[in-house]
Image 1 (cartoon, rainbow, N blue to C red):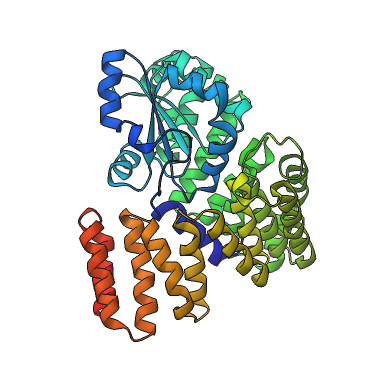
Image 2: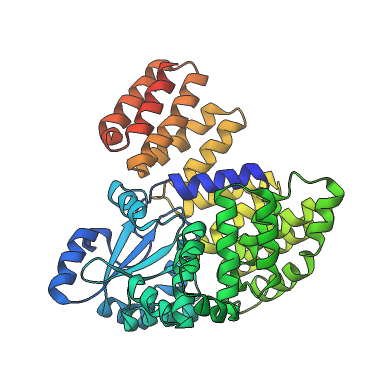
Length: 439
């Protein structure tokens, strides 16, 4: 993934609001978190918070492949399930409170609001349900695990470290481990799970401090172990942290990662039954690795293979699997197959007519190409389908297009309309929009 696209995707992940729930339950029928906790106290039943968003491609996978069928129905009887719109004001508050930094995330709370456990990122159903059932059956809060860890329970040590890792709290996790009795630390350090978790926390600590040398060292340690489905993400960290190195030194560092990643691609991306759910990240990371190694032929080949494989799996019905449909547009964009991308995005808009994401993306692309008049109808469609902070962000691009066409009065009118509908809940975005139209 090249840097502009990576930045664009990060902006979607952390700034766009969901246009609606992604699985069977209607948002109107789903309780708020506060109401669910009140019901939990009466029913003595745990609460499962499902943090997701309509632009989240990993959430598409969970919606269509995992949160379905008898297993999902059974889970809804075991717990009170709450759909949490990650970018609604309430959703943002709960994400801050629970320190959730990426989607999807599934958090189980007990009747008192204590966290029993969480699952982060997409998981295939054969992993998700055993994990969530174990959390529900165990009923342990983090404090209980910490007490057991103090007593020498290695599984509890690993559970606590995993919890810190899920929150990207590297320094606090390492600091907690340092508080354990020396004998416990010595025993736990011989456990492969604990060792990997400590290396992952060291990486998270280095990333929080932007210590490039420490990121490189920690990422290499993690990548030398069995990282399971985390390999593409850790390799991304290594790629980013090594950009300051000389070309020869960087290539020597990264060359060792080519063979392990190729094995990962063969088993987790281009296989019939992969155990890791996020295929997109592996493809893009592979292309980035090839680019860093100066192998443009390999970079093109992996993207072409991903495009061809995804098209075959998706068929002609784009609405049949949104995860795959969304992956394809990203692969086409990363491969710079612009004519195909243009035609494909218009097909996505037709396949998902009530979704703001695709007309928003296409409108932005047209605007970046210097075509504000062509962009406006798509941005208007995106505006009508969006709400909350998203509506303000879409309006920002509408203003850019209108001002480029010297239609300043319409730009001011668009801002007034958006602020009237959604401005009070998002003061920073509202202030930025006011400044933009006034400039």
